[in-house]
Image 1 (tube, rainbow, N blue to C red):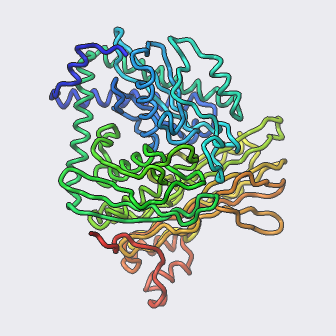
Image 2: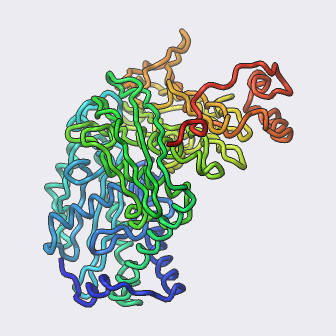
Image 3: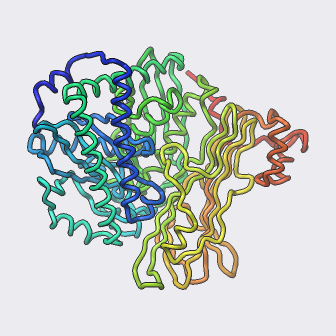
Length: 587
């Protein structure tokens, strides 16, 4: 890797920049990532990227530090992109050259988080010197393996989940490694669609690289690199300053995963947070060993989850860059569910990431009562339909993760039917589903009564009923909070659980929480209900105006309202079930 000496000196110096110019530069780099994000979305072929926006774009400095992510990037992607960049630096070092592009997805050799997220890394040069990396990650609708969509529950080792790609050079000096590319496409379903998505990623890298070169041409390489240093230092200082809102002490909380889709049930995740001055330490000691099913986390996914939750609680507007990661210390035992080792299966890692976020909030709720929220839906409910399209004889894979409720807040109700926390993807519109796939969406609605009662109500889950048209197909899925309810906070009630079911002329039958390869006969339909979210504060404190709005909305049945509002019901009704972190002991 060639590094300009002047640039190296600037990076090592503790310089103070004019804050206005620094902010303009930061916004220029941010605009480059936002533009690349839009370009990737518009050029992609799969609905998962072009409609649902399950991708991220970012710019790194020459040392492999994340400087800026696009505003709409997914927080969960922060770890895997960083791993790919550091892996490229470690493996290729000064052998990188202009026109190179590297790809990677492996959770262990490339520090990814799961195989469908394919990272693309392009080193960027100006006047022969490395000035940074243009990067993106996109969730491919299939990456091979034993199950269409590569996301089904029930897989028990990484080899079953798809093609493992270490950090490798896909393009060298502008020339494609066509043999490698052909091998990647040969091992996935829907190769033409995958090919289009790879090209979209490359286009985004090229655009972002061009914009970074333009910025360096305007400000100079030395200034830009020293400004990057200041941006990261400023972010870390900003996060550490936010620690002042947390009194020094030790805070503990735990929660469970429903199951791993294979054999484990009620899987514990435990967290203790120790805060002292401007240092904060997250210790996951006592959490479950890694499990056979594919809900394990690699360490970078755990760190990404912790950073998201802490930033959301303390300073949501802070830049999402390496400074946030540098401000926290996270420890988890190797071989645990939150620091899995090869060959642990990890395809459904986002389910566990969501639980880690809930647990961080549960820990800190007692000392941050106006910032904490009730547990959100705690899942990344995954649905995968696959089969042969009777209209054209081509195979298809439809992948979607569905939102649910967001926890009630101190000053307002939680949001209904949206992605929460780390997984801020969009929904896939009904029109797009029915246009692209031989499927009919017969119902798309909120689940009545699924939000936990409270002074502020928890958000509501989503109900979708999807029927294959003119053919039989298979369904795979993965759900969480299907048996354990999202807890309320400060006396708020728990949200409702979710579930999968199959409906036919004989009625409706439940499916497992993480079904794989379930055959849907022609004429049957899959029913998907996602979890709601926990409420905030005692239901008795809900004001009359909000209760009247509840009655008008149709979201809550009269029985629900009568059960939770003393003015409308028997005051001796049982209190809502579910744990409340605000009542738990703080050491």
